[in-house]
Image 1 (cartoon, rainbow, N blue to C red):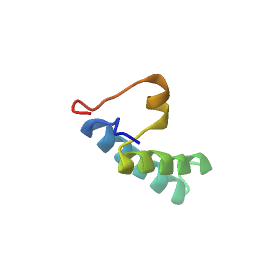
Image 2: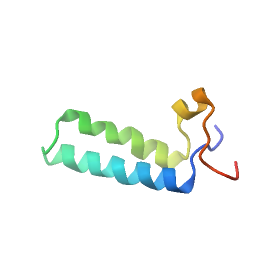
Image 3: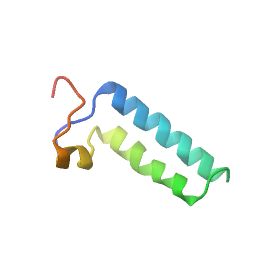
Image 4: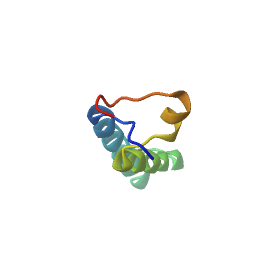
Amino acid sequence: MTRNLGQIDRIARLALGALLIVLAVTGVIGLWGYLGIILVGTGFVNFCPIYRVFGIKTCQDC
């Protein structure tokens, strides 16, 4: 599993994922907010399987 997320992409995924999870826990949005877990997970491991399928890399040194 090679890295394919750049720093900005990674931070955006972590922030958006955390926000979705918090909104789902507080009941502001529905259960779909728990999809933020996927964003947080891909942000932590620096790898997005969908990016790999399409050949996208947002990191400059990988």
